Length: 356
Ligand SMILES: NC(=O)c1ccc[n+]([C@@H]2O[C@H](COP(=O)([O-])OP(=O)(O)OC[C@H]3O[C@@H](n4cnc5c(N)ncnc54)[C@H](O)[C@@H]3O)[C@@H](O)[C@H]2O)c1
Ligand SMILES: [Zn+2]
Image 1 (cartoon, rainbow, N blue to C red):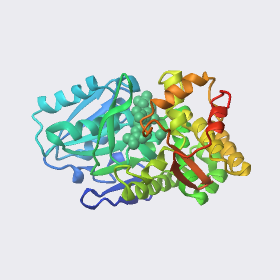
Image 2 (image 1 turned 30 degrees about the vertical axis):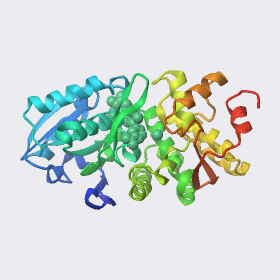
Image 3 (image 1 turned 180 degrees about the vertical axis):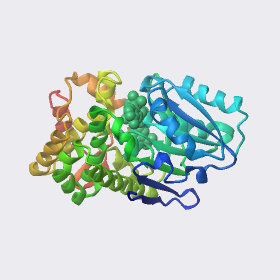
Image 4 (image 1 turned 135 degrees about the vertical axis):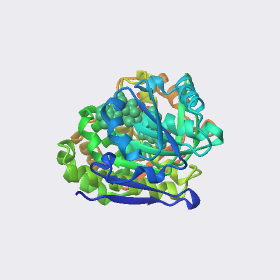
């Protein structure tokens, strides 16, 4: 049997494990032990449920299991879909001791987590992420929510899971483009807080793209360790946690201007990280290394063409704006990041294509 790795997210009474391994859905780790009470509601979508729901169900044996399948896609990360899940919790007579289990990518995780945060003022939930992005990023840290017409993730709550169960075998069915998008967040961890991991990624990118299981397992494990450390230090993003948004101010603007779904989040973040690295004014060698790694992952190194005014307007909508002054995550050098409102205004104008 293959190895199971366990990482603790240290948050006092809200602490929980991230368990990573192959074939975990099939029962080599008892998910049912983390189900509080007697029943649970598995939330999945119409792509993931046919692939993995039957694999997970036996692992919940001994509990009363209900399930709800939502429509696939970011467009369905809405209050209406949230209501669908809440309706199901009410319909099945779920009590305060029920557990919501999210089986799917970041969309399912965010919305199911938010349903768990809302139902009866908060019930337990378990994350079973099935995309690389969800395994290395969205399932860890307790940010949950849905989108509003006016912006992404405008409605949400912090609500930590009881368990994050990562079965790396689920990546077998994920398409290459989604895999690469997840790698953008993996690269991000190296760039913001772990130069050795960054160097490891430089050497290992071909193996990752070929889905070498050991390489993927290490990338996921290290990403989760780094995210867990940052979240443990600053659960509610009062400070340091913001470094996880490296590349995201530009990235969110790209997603917004292109129309959500045109560029995947990870693709937008990839181009956004390069813009942020340029804005940082770090050495050209470091920028070149980041560019090469992003390119090696098959991710965009340049943003799409966006009119300067649209860039700035889109960044003005970014939630990380504080008192109208943009706040960026910049690099001190490759492997160290900080947040600041004190950036080179001329360089920013140049990056978004307007005259300085
Ligand atoms: N909460 C957080 O901290 C956080 C962090 C980053 C991103 N997010 C959110 O995550 C979402 C993006 O997540 P995502 O990239 O996982 O997108 P996603 O959930 O839309 O999944 C991408 C696609 O892959 C499919 N899929 C999922 N698992 C699969 C599998 N194993 N095999 C085949 N297909 C599979 C999905 O059905 C979907 O079509 C966004 O809504 C974003 O806001 C949240
Ligand atoms: Zn992201």
